Length: 293
Image (cartoon, rainbow, N blue to C red; front, side, top):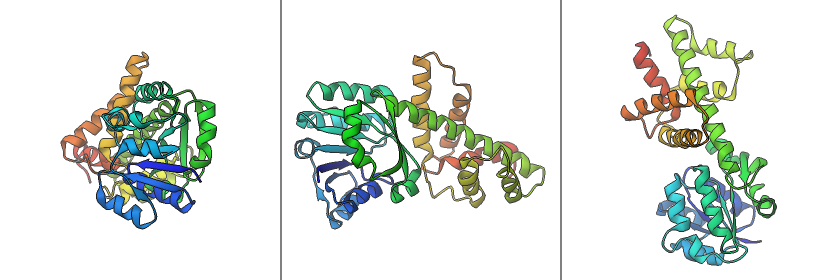
């Protein structure tokens, strides 16, 4: 088995790393959260405090980090992965970052004889735990084929989207749709509630027709359960993704009207102190505006 480095053991990264260990891979892990690192060590992983040494010791390095600047620090920073990159090294970044960040990192690695894939995921923590994530991959076909056996241990649906940055661009489209769908569910629920309807019955009725969606099923249920403090995806992270989408749309002269509106609603929620809560907390803003619960 090839040696794999794994950097970023958060809500998504930790179960993904565990799946690789269970698949028999040798893992060298790193995270700012020592508790997560220690947990992986008890399951058979080796730990490292140096990105540079991870690059030197591993054939493939996987990153799962919150934002673009975190990824740039890990890869391009002092004693980062780039400094230790050897010819043939493959970086698989599974974070959700700006496409231009993925393209920039890919160029830097190629100059050292290494390569990279941008491979963001969809499916949330349940998909990470069950290894049923949907993975959107950008990069060279050669890099994709090299990384595919590893990706198959993490996801169920793996799609090669094209050159570097294509995976992240696809993920932005994903985040736009989810954000707008959540806002649509929120508004429908608010109208139904204020008219006196039973929201459970409304959701059930809507799921039986063309209005049905995975967002209505999963996020709609989460709204009914009011488990906002148990985030499947934190509001602040979704807002970050929409910022990347809006910046990308601006650069490409693509108007994203609904995306901009949902981003503003998220800003209102963050201003209310909901940044660390689930992105379905958009419901709380709608409740305040409509004077309902």
